[in-house]
Image (spheres, helix red, strand yellow):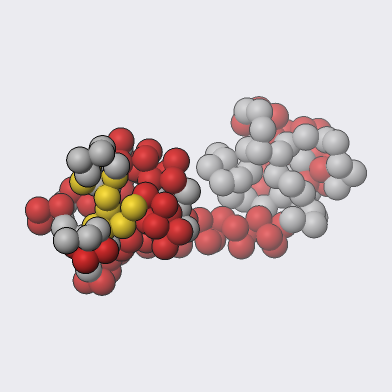
Length: 165
């Protein structure tokens, strides 16, 4: 019986069908996220259901879910089966809050993009308005206002500048 008749894909076919580079397929396999059978010549063969697992992995990554969390989610499925639409709904429900927080942070960044890059530096002319006398420097280096910055007291900003976090 030929490979296609058994419902398997070569590594190249799996890569083309999923849009995932061959190197990523090998990485996901090493990380235990997908599995492959080996031929007598030691070539990888992926079950067609691997395409759905790959879609699950890539979509989860786009949501900002770490590979360890993805592995944990996949390991929670009975017998390591391929996620169903119902599985996706249940597993992704726990990630919604994080995605909502990221969306809110991006909206806040977009809405303040013209005023300040949120870094606490004085390199832009508008930073003097949003960060008078460099008060944000006390909160640490880098972009201290976004996304996990400590709150800035309104009293530290001019009325036209900083918003409290």
